[in-house]
Image 1 (tube, rainbow, N blue to C red):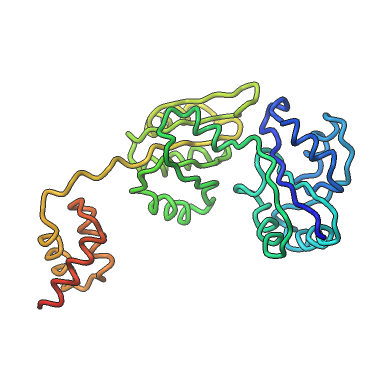
Image 2: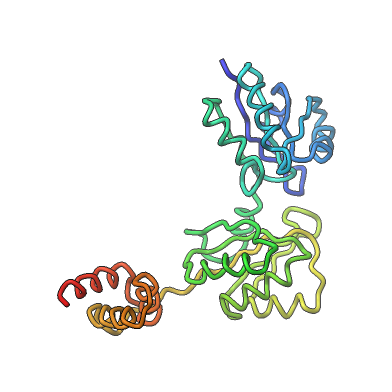
Length: 280
């Protein structure tokens, strides 16, 4: 019978946030897979836990994952920990979880800290629906394409960001979403210098032009305002789509353009345009 992979959430700053269940689990497993064994060793030493550590991170996850799986299949139990927070969420633990699931290994989550959810809770922005986008690419073109794809996203958006990239990211966010869009910048969550700044993207850009970003950030950005109801009937919108088709634009792109200008549903426009095409 195979062992169990435990996903053990660790503190994101304040060591007092670790749960008794997490400590019990780390104390009971056969070995611990850690993103950075040096960081995890400090945590284990603090709580008097002595267990074998193996390295599992972004650059060795393929080989290390197979090694961990082999041990699990022989009946050993493993705890997976990241440097801070919940393993497998915007984290190299994701492939290991998938590998174990594909091979029938039991996987249990030992819940605890998650920076994204903590930031969302204190942001003051809508929490009912949200999308977690993780870290944006360091490549400017890829970063802009990612943000452009979210331009009309109505849910609250959550991003992780490093201090040395914050200014560039704020500039892109402001340009794509507009300087009036609301944002909460949560810095050093649960740590001594924890701070949440609630403002517009324009105000955030101006503030950090004069202030050096420090510490790790979670950015919580308000979603786009709902599109105003269309003032034209869908059949008229469909006619605009067909006119764009005659100029050489693809149907999908024509529907998207008319929908953005009129507020009509893309699905309704698409169906109405196809219906009108049949009648021509």
